Image (tube, rainbow, N blue to C red; front, side, top):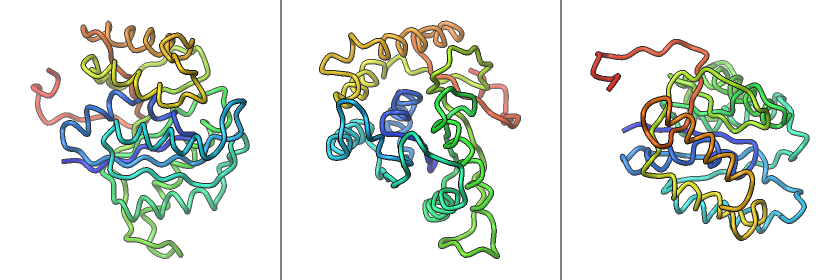
Length: 227
């Protein structure tokens, strides 16, 4: 079983980008931890206490073992040494096999910063002569999920079939009522997610799928892995 770490700038970003895949991972017995670099506030209808309750509710549905919310400022998140080191210490404690980060091209500065922080923290995590807690480790694989504010075509490295989990993914999004209202299925963000996941699914002959991007080449052990 794999040890998986998914990092997002705000509560709900991981769910929007790869909620269906995490549901699949936990069903298969993989250990998943989520780190939100900010609490997502301020927002027009939210507050820190509400956002915390919403993320806890979502985490229970996801079946994850741990969710960590750091205290960096929403809207003003920066790729700085402090954030890199704090995430690196989490990596060294958790020892993940795989790290998921937001796609590095985005209109939202927090998403771009989070992607950069993840890349740096992966590197910092392996260093030995550095004042960081935990055992040095180098995360074997880093993949990037799509939770973007840009209407941009991408070339994914792979797609994960989430057809069985699409209703649960919408339920996850519905946990964030302060962001998407009491009827999330009517929200334009949810409509966009459904349309996007349906498009990616169509490319691999399934109903719904989530795309993932990689900076590095991906190897397979044998041809059966393609089916």
